[in-house]
Length: 230
Image (cartoon, rainbow, N blue to C red; front, side, top):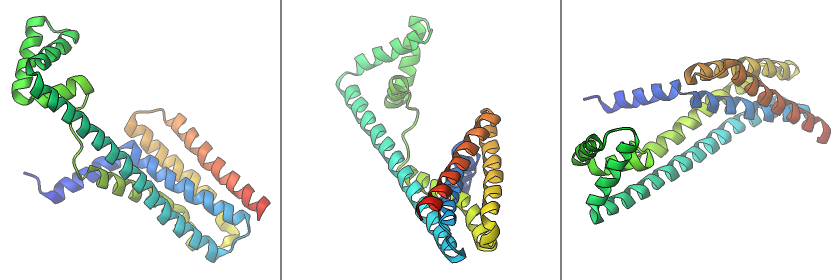
């Protein structure tokens, strides 16, 4: 039986391989770089830019993680409500629920006798799971820790992406960091977009174009706003 540490590591590896992880990292890159461009357009110095980038990384990561936690927690609550309703229906009318399950498999193309047999076997094994899968497409209810881990993973991914402009702000002087951030953002967005496209089996070109349009557009608007209004 795998240990808790092994299970946690396997979960983290699966998360990294998901395209959503790369998208969360892209959000961190774009949000932090856009904020920095706004401050740079307003003529902010090195120290203020560094403070702003770190604040953006922390606040953005916590905000993204909190939003993800709330989203997954709400999803789990909805699943539990559906499971309670199905459990009550099974207790009140097990015969009718069995007939509905047989009809479901018959609708999937099985002969009536075979559909009935499949329904009976699934019900004998786990009646609630069979009903949740057939009626709601719910194969498994999220674990109690799922919202917390999802929020944590999203926050980490966001902060990793945000770290790109933060590090440039720390190491590069203000005279060149605007262009350095621009180049680094383009390269980072390209890499994460290609990774996400490959893992999700999506069009790499379309994802790359979308990421660059959003990223460069955000930075451009932020810089312009900083230049005009401050």
